[in-house]
Image (cartoon, rainbow, N blue to C red):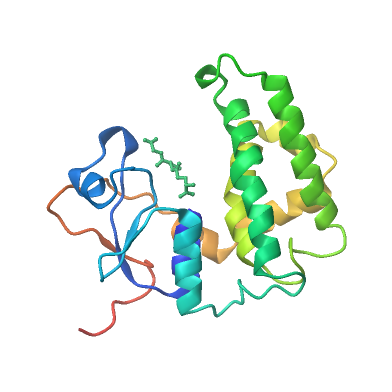
Length: 207
Ligand SMILES: N[C@@H](CCC(=O)N[C@@H](CS)C(=O)NCC(=O)O)C(=O)O
C-alpha cells in the first residue's frame, strides 16, 4: 500500500499487476526471485524490491505534496522513524496479529513493545498534526499502513487507548482521498496478460 500511495501522489504511471501471494506468478519470480511484494520494474530493467525504495524513487521524480520536505525534521529523521516501524514495530505487529505463526513468541511482550512505540507516535502528534510537522510526509504515509494493521487487530481495544491524537491521525488518513484511491482490490494478474494502469484516476499519457 505504501508504494501505491507514493506512486499515486507523484503521478507515476505504471502497469499494476496484482499478486496473490499463495499463487505467485512466474513473472514475479523472474523479475524478483525474492518474490515479496511490492516490486517495481523500471523501463531500464532496474528492479526495486523494497516499498520504501519505490516511494523514494517516485518522490524523487515528482513530489507535489512535499513528502520529502517535512516542515519539522528532514528526510533522514523520517527514515530513522520508518526504520523503527519496519523493524521492531513490524516484528511486534506480526506477533500480535498472527500469534499462531509465532508459537514460541511472547505475545504479551510483543503487545507491550508495540504499545510503547505507538505511545511515542502519540507524543509526536501532541503539538503537530503529522509526524514531522504540519503536513503529511513520507513518514506518515510509510507508517500509517502498519498502524492501521495494528488498529485492525481489535478495533474496540484500539478505540479504548488513550491516544486521541494517534487515533485521529489514523482516522483522517483512512478517510482521505489518496487512501481511498489506492484501495480498490483487483483481480490477480495472470502471466502473459497486461495489468491495469495505475494510478487508477490518471489517464495514460498520449503514446
Ligand atoms: N520490507 C519489504 C517487505 C515486503 C514484504 O514482506 N511483503 C510481503 C507482503 S506485505 C510479501 O510479499 N511476502 C511474501 C510472501 O508472503 O510470500 C517492503 O516493504 O517492501
